[in-house]
Amino acid sequence: MLDYLGRILPHCGTVRASGSAALALAYVADGMENTFWTAFSASLLAAFVTSIGIYVIRRFEGWGRENSIYFVCFAAGALVYVGATHLLPQAETEQKKYSLFALGAGILVAVIIVLSKG
Image (cartoon, rainbow, N blue to C red; front, side, top):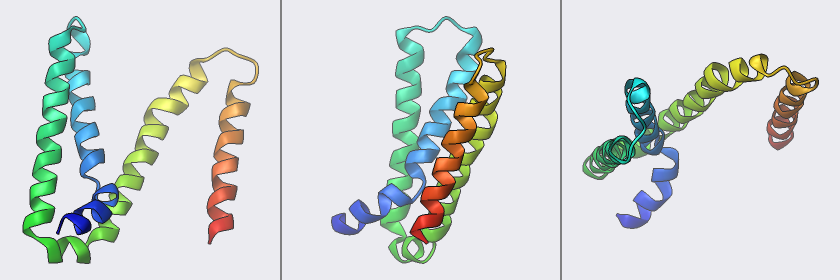
């Protein structure tokens, strides 16, 4: 069982979900002073969500194996969402001469890598 969890956890989205939960807490606490307790609360929330994900995968192993591709797609979608909502607006606000060019070049390199693999 632990071998299966070791193979499926990097692909199942629980890590992404815990990161999203911690990010949501950080947005809520944005108006608050960034203190130790804010970081500690975000870490506890991430650990809790990850623990729930591990329990669900452990309890419903067959279901996890059948639907692992959906977990991978969810994780990929979360990465695209973060890039589109956080990185692109930040690149637009930068008044550097080549910031948008560098961002576009990075995206182009990523697309070339993906297309060369398959």
